[in-house]
Length: 156
Image 1: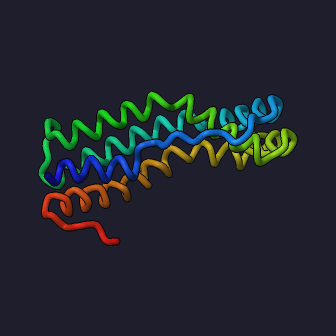
Image 2: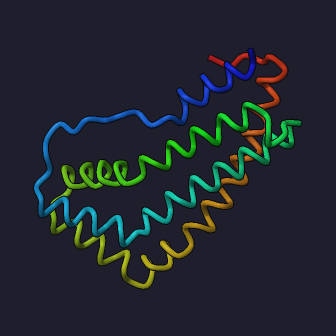
């Protein structure tokens, strides 16, 4: 029963929800937004985030006594694979969000920053920062698995 509860909690917390666009963004803004995402390394960051989440969950689950064959671990891996399959769609949706909120000129200015020295350094450091953040997440994943296995109900 706790495994079913875990999958339910995971779905509510991590499963992507389809967000429909209110308006179609201007093509020039959309192009600028996609260029910004490329400059920030969003695709690589998303891949790194998924890898970090998988690694963190596996480590947390192992720390809580689960094996790689545990159905909870298998379910998480399956959902993360599906999550990864939405990557380009998510990037397009994010670009659309940016394109609706910023002008093409503003987006190009931010892109210029990310291609500059400090911006490029930020992009370069992002995977390391995400990995360190994932280690923090591992501690909490392990706590969550332990709570689920011991029957501790989530706090409202």
